[in-house]
Image (cartoon, rainbow, N blue to C red; front, side, top):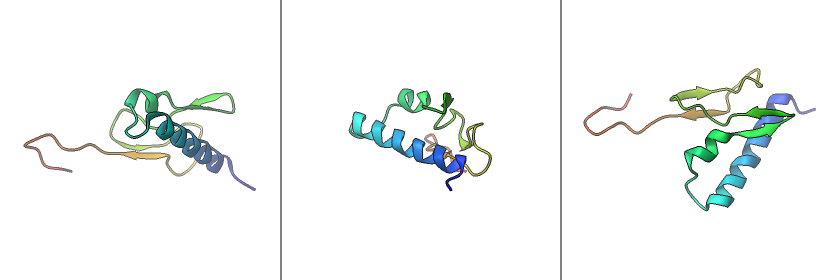
Length: 77
């Protein structure tokens, strides 16, 4: 039996594949920010803040990890 978190991840991968197909490369943040619908709820693929993102619909694990390129003259964390 597939658990709910796994089903959300599968739906997220399907959404990402669709975005990659539609954009043909780099996907605009606005499209990522929209997330996707799952069981009548909006699930977000990532948060605007840097770090680990777990949608509220998930109970364990994470959906995405986001980092940023350091600005010129700054060191990476």
